[in-house]
Image 1: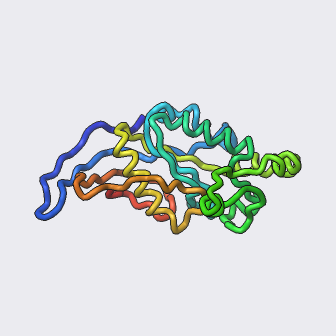
Image 2: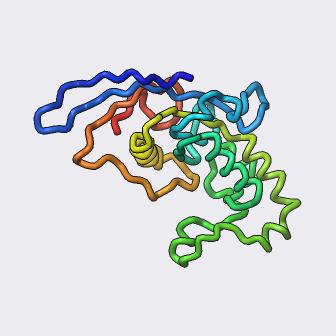
Image 3: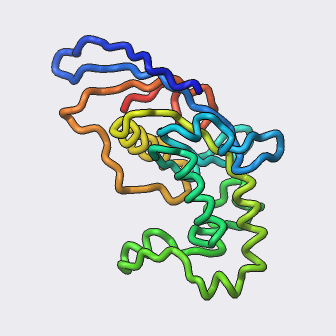
Length: 211
């Protein structure tokens, strides 16, 4: 596991919060299961740790973000997402268009915005799901196979929350999945942190990230 506990403390800058550097590493790429020379994310050592995970789809050699999340055990959270995908609780996109990043290819599932406006937080229609299950199941399987998952091990819960919030803001211009909105970025009273390093070509993700 490549999350480092070593931290380099810098002196405070005048008129600003102190800046602390935390060394961590983006690990991956993983699949949900072993295929196409990918290791299953559940076999990765980092999956048992706390951190932030990023679901991506590989497009022309780069990785475009679908979803960002965090948890005290990334593997446990990813299993919940997998279960929700397989049970039709998440949106389904036409597979051949999904893998090239076409946002208009949704074929099943309520949009998050519509659910919030109506006060309905049920993202799927089980009647429709059962009627269309033969059509949708291959598309769900193909979507899951297309995901490339990256793990960023971070032990401290508040640092995870800040990193998740920063990544959602950083990546939302290219992301097209259901990004969480109940996140809390750094407050003015909290010290700035710089996380390093990202050696993976995820769109809009720099090698160093200030959170």
